[in-house]
Length: 143
Image 1 (cartoon, rainbow, N blue to C red):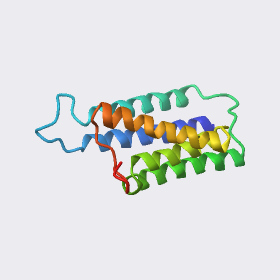
Image 2 (spheres, rainbow, N blue to C red):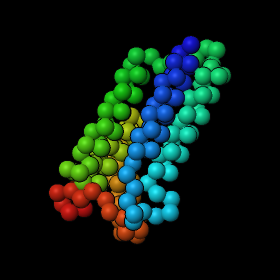
Image 3 (cartoon, rainbow, N blue to C red):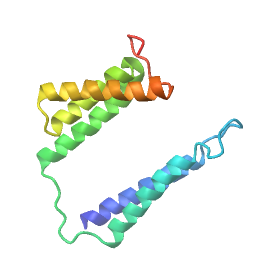
């Protein structure tokens, strides 16, 4: 039964997401694809996945224990804080902190997680900003 509840909630979110994508205002300077296509794709994949859970639920789903659920909730809070701090701290710092925390929770040692977080942040910055020329959030140090 819990799979069907999960599928129903996911389907409702997918429908809401598609509806929100449909009201995106398009400017006359958009490309041929437009800003609505990517949200529609995400809503479609989420909707199809949710319908699968509704039609073919697992007979005995294994849900994580309370401690693991709390850890997942904390990871969600870290990602929400990342989105909020991105304009303030900048891409490099915010990404390094979020990536370091998440890799630590996935099993790396703290020092390894810090190195991975910084390496990921700097690597993505180099590829997206310096190579591809995309604009990323600037932090207090100008990068």
